[in-house]
Image (cartoon, rainbow, N blue to C red; front, side, top):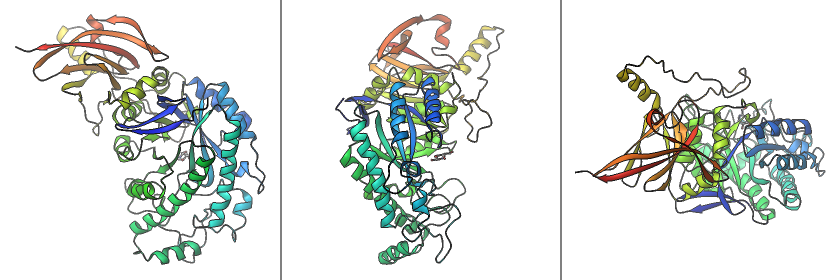
Length: 501
Ligand code: DGJ
């Protein structure tokens, strides 16, 4: 129990370790207010556990934690840890401190009401503060107060969370300034003048990024000195289609154009992470999966193929959907988690040794075939294959594509998550001739120059605590779809290769 969760860097990328063992994190983030009462912690965590998630990202609000200055209330924090433990969930805490979605609505009233001590950010010189409170990151008083509260939280984790149920923390939330490329408050202005930089939005975004990176790093560094847990920040993405300058997206947050600035000025932040609500998620993942940055997605829509792509192509250390508790019981994501959570160390080991690939069809931004050395694996769209077979065989069968059901329970929700009909999955190499495939709607075709490669055996099965449990042996008609069209399953495929004459 004394081994702390940690993020490890190695030759092929990064791994997350819990109890000294490599694992991938499969979870979701609950709604912003779901951890604000005992009852809603209970109901949201219980729902998340029923969807097979094994961690939950959950907020701690500064406003509730330190309602009056210097008096800290640990009740909700303690309850979150207890509840998570009872459901065998790990916890990733979001520190909703001075900044949440480029605003400061989670700062306590005593902070927001003292504008002399805690000045507001200004979007224009001499302008008035925005209606929704936005504090200036250039205020040392703000940093001191935020830091004091955050370190109290870390002290509590050190002394009370001996089992390390809290495995990681997010510092603030989607930081940055909206409406202007830089803060024009008095303190910001004097820092800006001292730098003597050109007044362009690009330079302003870098200026803001440096300030925010330093601010977050101060919290992370001090927090780690108390309890050395991995810490990350998350990005409101930018530029998004149609946006031409910083301020349209939060200026200075860890968005795509200033990742290097963040890396330079926030060395104690382990990861810069993207909140991916864009439908074109694949290119976004490529921006954040860097040699110096492990991919972890704290917020996303519930879209199955993106999970496989993150784990298999970018060797992501974890994945999480926003509005976790809105998931429909039995949806694709929870089925995927049900399988993957029994194989999470197997997946993580295969990432670390470079033996994992992702397949994502009908996705223009994803490459189609994958290789292990000279062996090429090409995904075949099962639906198309079945249709061809039926035509050639002259059989009168109607084969339909998936009727997509929403992944969420409530169809009236703001962020839609329609089921994903892209055939997708991950391939894990066990040996030169043996491969696990976890996915749906895909058949595999193997080839290697100079060899004839045939499928020798297909074993349907499942994992139980990392152990492969074989079920049916698939041949004949069942080889037409080694995993179902619309459901996720796993198979172990054995190939044999021999020299071509
Ligand atoms: C991004 C934020 O980080 C979340 O807290 C949440 O507000 C979602 N947007 C959308 O509801």
